[in-house]
Image (cartoon, rainbow, N blue to C red; front, side, top):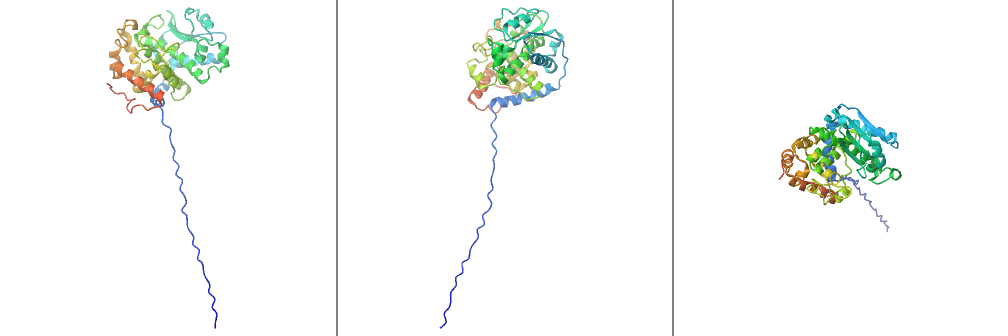
Length: 343
């Protein structure tokens, strides 16, 4: 009898696992309404960089406490206004700028040219003297607000980047008032009311936008305007252009520029470009001043419709669309920045 041995064989199997593919997605942040408008305006900054216009002699009066850095900055801003700006007519007149760090210094520094002692708290101003197209600046007020002392402002870092922007843009802003008077064909060195031939939101706001465009040229950066902000939009949400046309609304700071005028003029420049928008200035030469208007837009509605392809009332709605988009973080209508006729 033979005994057999039974052996058992176990087979092992190998499972091949395919490598896992990791898919990486990049989410781009949605551009805000303010960013979209700024990008469009930036396309109109590029031609300004190529200008090389004549810079006239500019006469400066600096208060003793104004630093050498501030003096250098002032000269750069004033000269760049003429070299790259939109008002070469102003170079045919005598131009002057008075720069100080307090109300007292403003009065004393400007006194040889003009008495500004009855201006109250002084931030900045343009005034014809009969000889000069004169810009008056209190740098402390633009860095940290009117009524703040120079020492307190310096302790706050001179307002930081926002203070630096506010100061620089306003030097150009005030010079541009004289430029607008010259563009209308009037003598900017004479004390006059020619700026009042335009609605206040336009006269003030377009100077801010042009100033911000010039800063982009000077700094070699893209256009930006920190005044198009939630704070400014909220502050002036009850001051539409109809209210900011014949009087300044919005409390101590007003809304004819920051808060309403900047929003309105950004739309116009984004749609039509700065040169086209400034045709509204030259076309305002024959308008009467705002104290004689029958309503907020009667005097200038025809010119506005012809240049910008919509009525002032329709445009007022667009300004509120933009303001509310900034407040609520919502998108602008797809055709909002197109230069087209609107009802």
